[in-house]
Image 1 (spheres, one colour):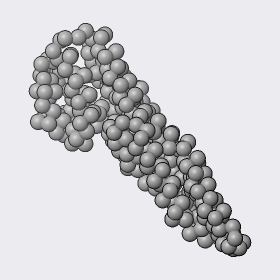
Image 2 (cartoon, helix red, strand yellow):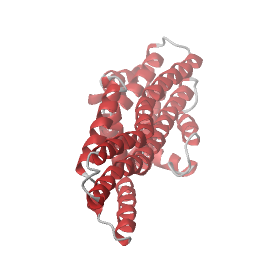
Image 3 (cartoon, one colour):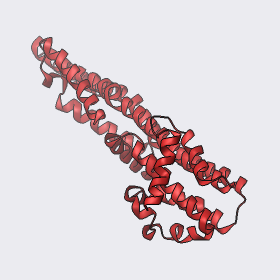
Image 4 (cartoon, one colour):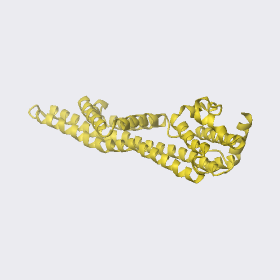
Length: 287
């Protein structure tokens, strides 16, 4: 929502001041210049990266319009899930977690948190992190480096769309100049048609330069920055999860393992220590 509001402010401020000076909005958006800029930008976008990165870029852009990173409720759900799993493993042994990890879609714990269960990437990370502990194939102190390597791989993959959008943001002013130069070339062919025709043609050509700069700095660059913030939030979510799992694997009590994860987050994203403990214990006793 805030993204759309911000874009509307950018557009409204630009058009509003131009109209106050006596201009018409259609003077800024000549259709030939728009088509040239959009077409060239699309071509650059298609060429600049592999198909899977392009798809991730589109998804990242759409995702940024919906929200930026995990919410406070999502973090609280994560804390509850981790606590319930850890308590089950502490009471009944680690093998009791096997049915939940092997088939999370039928898990009585995960079914209580449909939003988390619907996120395939997060549920896969959690289950694959718990699997070595259950199987006993890894020592506790070897688990966290393994999870860190997986998080680093996710971070690297998430940076692909950032690189593409940086490229587009840097390229758009130049693309706008290309469109403007094409307009000037056409203007020179009309040099014998009088100042009114030439003036109108030059104005249309200059709208290409305006559009390239306007789209780059008013839309693409802010979107790139927003996606970067979203990536950092997602990374913090996985780091939080990995720290709790690593602490549990080292033998910390479930409540302390979750508390360690809580302390790795901003205070605005999670309740205080006492409040979280009461929430976790009440949710477990209620289940």
